[in-house]
Each structure stands twice: as structure tokens, then as C-alpha cells.
Image (cartoon, rainbow, N blue to C red; front, side, top):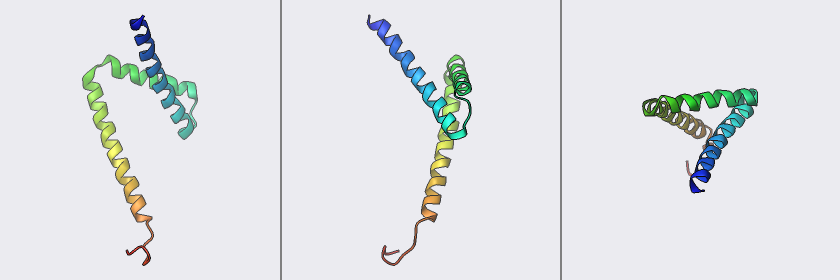
Length: 89
């Protein structure tokens, strides 16, 4: 029974991740939800089939993209900061 429930939980986690990514893309870009499921599903399948090297490369590029995004958000936030005498700046 444990093995059956374990595989069901793994499938549920993957399905939730694909569904969440498809919903996010639908919300941000307005693309068709079902098309997003196919795109994300193919991406996950490709990363699964081609192994750890592709996942490692993909995570490297995603990490770089996250760091660039954080720096842009930080820079915009700092540039929008009002300079006033009350705050001691």
C-alpha cells in the first residue's frame, strides 16, 4: 500500500507543479491554459529524459536569470526611494 500511495503522491506533486506553472503563464501572458500544460509537460519530460546534465545546465541558467531579476528589482526599488531630510538621507 505504501508503494502505491508513494507513486500517487509523486504524480500529484508533478501534476501540481505543471498545473501551477501553466496557470502562472496563463495569468501573466494570457496564453491558453491547455497549451501551457503541453509546453510545461514537454519541458519537464525533456528534462527528465535527458538526465542530470541537462537539469544541471537548466538550473544554472535559471539561477543566473533569478539573480539578474533580483538585481533589477533591487535597483528599481532603490532608485524609487524618496530622499528626504526626515529619513536622515
